[in-house]
Length: 298
Image (tube, rainbow, N blue to C red; front, side):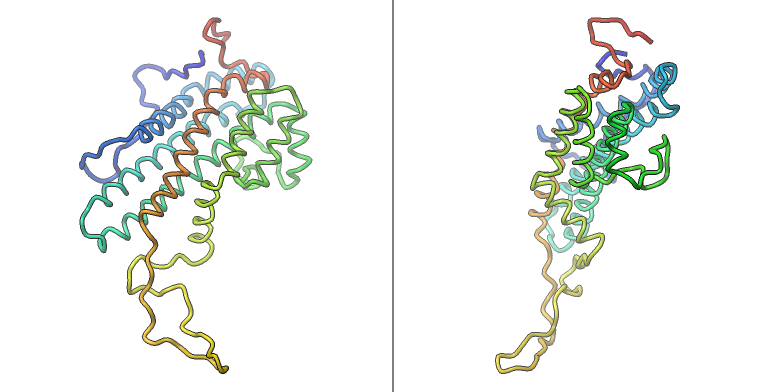
């Protein structure tokens, strides 16, 4: 294989949709096109999974590890593409004239865009973790800090074998990859850690935490507002406001801008990590790719 990640001819291995719903045309921005390109490019890593697995196991790598690395990488590409699809569909709804009718669908689509954005990043974080596990010194550092793991076995369904993309968890990965001389893997881990620390990413993650774990207010004016009826009187005692105030709806432009900023940041980071992916594997002794000047050893 060369560093170009070319899929085999005649088989669909990637999909980036312009819509989930209808045929309404929408112009793609340059940012949309960049996201689509990197989403597609990560997906076409996938067809190399089985050749990589054969090569890896013949060289002593744990069975299933290469398939897991390549498969999760391709899956992250699909998630990134779905985030773009939802962004485009939200934009279609925003173009409709009646604001009261578009609020709920735009909000729902934007929230799902955020979901796929966050899950794609978690996927890439776990790809970098698993590349690091190919090296015994890096693995020792990870297991020292990540004591709840159950072995990081390929295809594990145990949540403790898959890191959350939190700053604390990924700082452990970033620390671990410094155990060896691996500049491309280290640069990939650093790029993802800087993504996680970015305020644009933090804003999206905080909104997800509110929606998933706290109280996501309704998307209609007559919904229950996330505020109390009660307030203190100056002379003591309590009073209630009745009838209650209308539910204040979140600003759709702000929501879309917040989710779009995180998605574009992820796409730029994913492009950087993909560029380093073949060399990072080579640094860990997995000679799946060769430089374009040389032959494929497989």
